[in-house]
Image 1: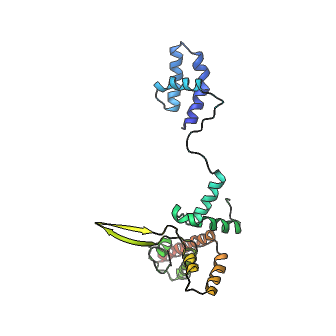
Image 2: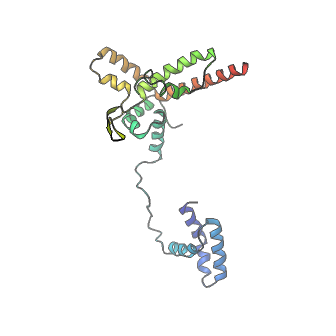
Image 3: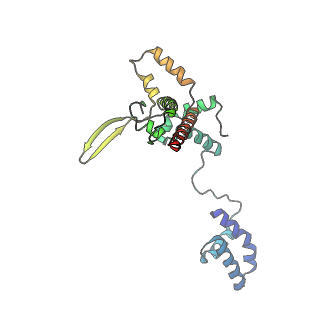
Length: 234
């Protein structure tokens, strides 16, 4: 029960409390009822009634943190967070603007480098560690890997370690201040031709992170169903 709800209970019984002034038995009954409902301490009942009685009803109590964003902004940010595969704030912040543009472009409303480089960190994270014996899962595993490659290389921002220094028994690691996707790193390189970068931009322009995540979930479900069916046959 919130403080606001408790205050409403006290306000509801305030008139009875004031009328029972001098009647210890009646006030005891009111106090026992409020303690039962609100689970507050019996000694706080009279103090709370006095606080509510003296409270200026025209004054709006503004406790807590200042409100900067309303529920619509929070809902939109939640959609962006899901599209980033629930990335932390440091990794999500540099890409918020681009995610919002893509979700608006495709009509989505409220209704680490390379995949091959870190197989255990990327592919296994989406595919899982279960042994896959059924040959019929192979096409879906291949489709899953291709989709994960697109999602990670275009939409998964990482912060690379720039230096590592050993101090006694510990290491001091320094990371890039801004998280960057592999796609952005390629565009920033000078040893890659403009034709290759333009093709990459065209590919990036038609991708949607939420659609890619939905495809990944669909392939994972199909792989699981085929694996389970194959094991039931043996």
